[in-house]
Length: 107
Image (spheres, rainbow, N blue to C red):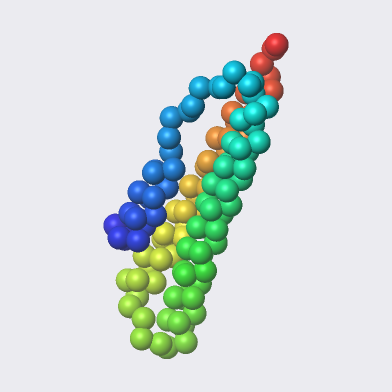
């Protein structure tokens, strides 16, 4: 396992924390802050996907241009970029399924 990937995974897990109970002020007082946190988390995840794909593209270009690049590093970075993208797609699919399930609920 790539050490940088393990570090990014552990830093991502550090962001996960239990839900805090609602304050007596109601839902509106917490909604603004939590939406901004979600946006930041989502932007960070997208940036992580972009950076892994950029690293893979750069290593492929370097290898094809004849620069001194280890083929194992190229293969590893390509696999890492692919897995990161597939994970993002599956998370999106699960979020869409959850949204659709909530929308089907009767009030």
